[in-house]
Amino acid sequence: MDAKDILIDGLERLPRNVHIAARRLTPEQLHWAPAPGANTIGWLIWHLTRIQDDHVSEVMGEEQVYATGDWPERFGQKDPTDTGWGHTPAQVSSVRPESVEVLEGYYGAVHERTLRYLRGLTDDDLDRVVDRNWDPPVTLGVRLVSVIDDDAQHAGQAAYVRGLLEH
Image 1 (cartoon, rainbow, N blue to C red):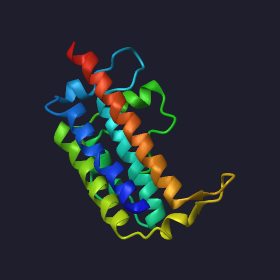
Image 2 (image 1 turned 120 degrees about the horizontal axis):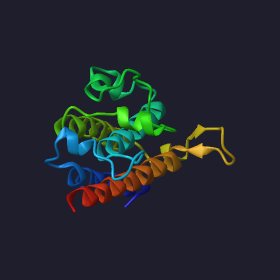
Image 3 (image 1 turned 90 degrees about the vertical axis):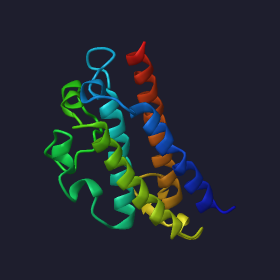
């Protein structure tokens, strides 16, 4: 198994976690917060997808999936560049997916594009520096691990919020 295959394996574990956290929820349930100012399931899944879309699009040198169509409007948003990073409670609350199908549809589109990209990489590609703003500079492999880690954490948080919602 090469490094690319390990990254693909990590990425392929995420859709099930996203689906478990969101399946069969109504828009109101996706917007439910366990406490004032807390993250909602809808926001958590939107945000993890936005981060993956933003980071992978950047290293691919392509436009984000979110910016190609009516995705922002379907989440009650206007800014196609907003990823949720640093959101205030009011901004978190403003993210309102139309439905679980929209939430999973956007995630699915980003996930499939990320997989296609990863399948075309070589181990040498993973050593390419993609961000010199850090010391040491960030390689493509490190950036992809960061995306998988961020997505896994947020999917777990969404599952936890769902557990609170159901009990």
